[in-house]
Image 1 (cartoon, rainbow, N blue to C red):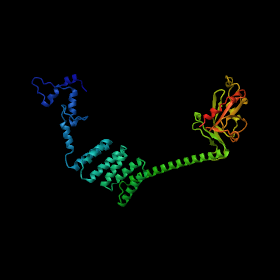
Image 2 (cartoon, one colour):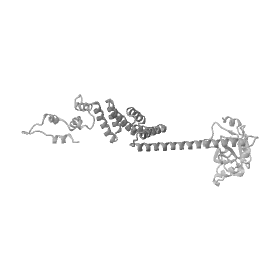
Image 3 (tube, one colour):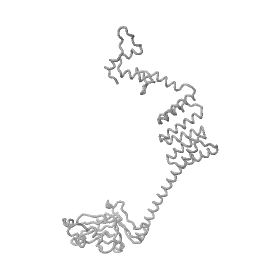
Image 4 (cartoon, rainbow, N blue to C red):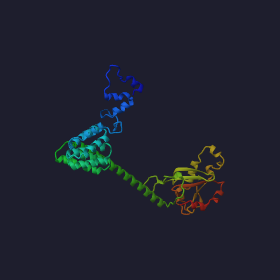
Length: 384
């Protein structure tokens, strides 16, 4: 845009003997470039943005006249005019603007059923593109009230139902439209309906397969849970839950090596605690056929530097004893060479699984007073 000084240089100033500016242009002689551009923008033909004023607080008469012109003529002519403008917007993918034009055309309320049906149908096409599926379906219904055999209305509403995941409704519409086409021996749009029908069929098959797989997973899960429950009962294992289980045990479960075979090995997560060090280890999987000696040997397979640390000198595997809680809240030393299956199957005392896991306390022989310091009442209070 030119500056005011550049405008002044190029402004026409009549010299002696030169013709004067006509009155309509003389008004601009004292205006800036910005003011001139605003005035030009008020002319409907040159508008780049809507300006409904005349620049002096009144209405833009030229614009109002143009608006009035849009409604001149018979109702069907006015409706057709708006429809054509809507069609132009639709072709340029200005769907929202097209909807407004089709709506204005319908507001004219012309008596031509064919025009009104096409307006509803065109607006449905826009709403389909805008993903306004409910509005698309409603417009198709209104079009069908005026033209019951309108194949495009069935087609577009079926596409909207498909997008909404209502496959039965979509399929019924396509089947009905194809039946009508066959009865009237019409081939136009039949191919598009058949393609849409195939898409709906494939979507149904996809959802049915997903449902089948979901049911399979659910049934497999139930079968595993049932087999595990039977296996626990057959072995006579007891499970106790505490108020505040170890966070690491979250989502950890007891499993069977063969998930539905009650006689296969049972696998537990395991917490191995070293109370005299205030430390612990977590073992992801411990078989019921393993022994405390094997687990201790595995965990204490450490470099010499570990045993050189303060308090760790007595943690050589041969120097360690294993304890587990009883159902009554006490502690009992367990044989290091017994399998966990033998330990957990004991009837006197009953040694339970804690929070669906093995809980083993490992203490050096030299710390014999550990057992006398065990607080049975506290252990019971921590249970649910």
